[in-house]
Length: 321
Ligand SMILES: Cc1ncc(COP(=O)(O)O)c(C=O)c1O
Image (tube, rainbow, N blue to C red; front, side):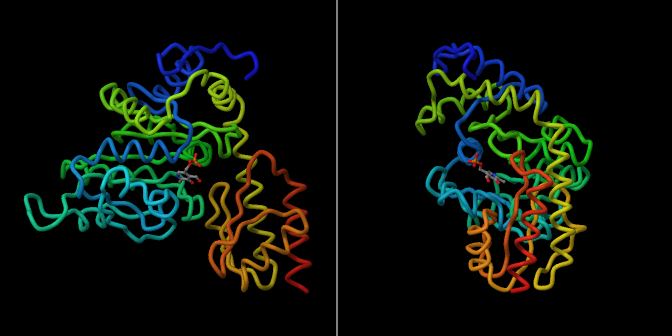
């Protein structure tokens, strides 16, 4: 990062940002890409790109990031209606999408306009959408003239877990993005990919939302480093998540099916999640409560096997007590 060659990113003059954008466009099977400060901004700009006049509708999972963690952005930035779907593991089926799409030409209902998919599913527990199921959703959306968006905050985890390439996941969507600040270990930043035309418009929205940067190459360099060095090692995070899940399954008072842990997220049930989270924190184990009776643990490159053993030891002690 200290050695990064930089320039004015707003004027397309930062060579490191430009290099990262080209790399991500190719990685995701798209024409162009845009470096943004956060993944949330990727989602918000994409939603704004795809939702035309206010009132159009987005079909997405009920526990997807734009619904639960973007401060109402779809309504604020795009005036979007939301059509939330339920489904195990944060996923839904092509049939559910078919049923959610409003009748064409109906002047009473909102107009279905966009389908969003999360790969992997965050609140679904890091599950990997099977390619075939994803293609089924894309087929239905395409047949009805809907746009499609892939939230790839943890796409590289899916790539490593499944062996399917990022381009095979990303190519069929109108827009797709990856985050550098999660398992990939970067300090910040994400990249949104799409057609040259969509990305040109995304640039305008980036400016509008105050996301345009100056010497962004300093952080883009970390994104390039992450793609070079931190992708394959995601397999370690997945192994550590499984180790955690299997260990937790043996502790009385924890409810978990370790076979559902496919990547780096472990969601499990306990009697009093906020209290347990506080007690764990006192012992240096940082795991957030997810409501009253669930917790969500995420493994990443600052968590090694020994840390998993430490966490399991703390769970054993606290739950036995
Ligand atoms: C699925 C998903 N989408 C989007 C985001 C937002 O990414 P960022 O934290 O870079 O804004 C997150 C962050 O946790 C996420 O899990």
